[in-house]
Image (cartoon, rainbow over all chains, first blue to last red; front, top):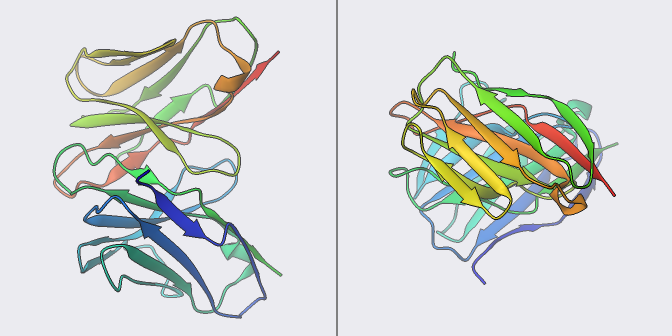
Length: 114
Length: 111
């Protein structure tokens, strides 16, 4: 089945220690998104890639970076995690930016910062 | 700033009851999507509504898009414990194609 896969499902890192979260998709979608979701809140868009074009949200901290080496994979790098970065990180894809922008989510990575 | 307000924020009901959750805005959306998110999982797309006044049914779930495309509702008939989850609405507006997310309605259906 076509899907969005995130690894790991749970990640524990230390304060200030860089961490990378991974996302892969078998949907062959052009757009990949990274969201941050904290408890009882809506997902907050951090950035997205349309093919190789990177689009950063204005309020995304510089501490968050992303890479998309190919169509299937996208990575979220947190350079110096703080306690406030503990959250669920969701990867999503959409076929294109035209149409209804229906997004398909992975299961998420729960990040804990100690 | 475009906002989507969802109500109620929390809802706890007994199995078999009916319920309606609302998603309201002062902005017009070209489309609106409903997602369900279970604890520890990513949101799953339930439906997309596009046309003002549109009604879509998905088994016991009925989705309606307001005539002016500013609001939407989700009605669940005879709720079951498996309906438990966070229901999120997300609207698409403007040329940037970003989704504007509501804060969600957390639904608990008790056996």
